[in-house]
Length: 113
Image 1 (cartoon, rainbow, N blue to C red):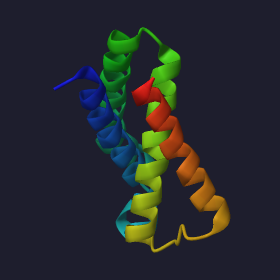
Image 2 (cartoon, rainbow, N blue to C red):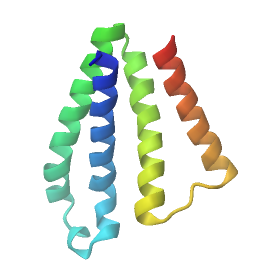
Image 3 (cartoon, rainbow, N blue to C red):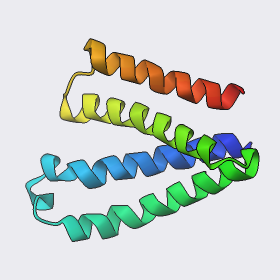
């Protein structure tokens, strides 16, 4: 498996964990007053996933700019999908769809060139 694909998988895991770290407080009463537990339980593996994804992109491209853009684009896609499916917030409006399109375009450019 190429470094790029592995990095995208790590970013996907990191972004998913970050989403749950920040939004679990809206999903369950139990998480509403536990930011430190949330940070420890989800923040540590989230950070490790980002670290490995970042490293793999750098090894592949020797560019932290590429790592930043790919992580951001994956984050927008993951955020949109999880927010829509779990929280029920629609992304079907011009502003959000435009941002999602731009994120996918950034990801395409970083992978392709």
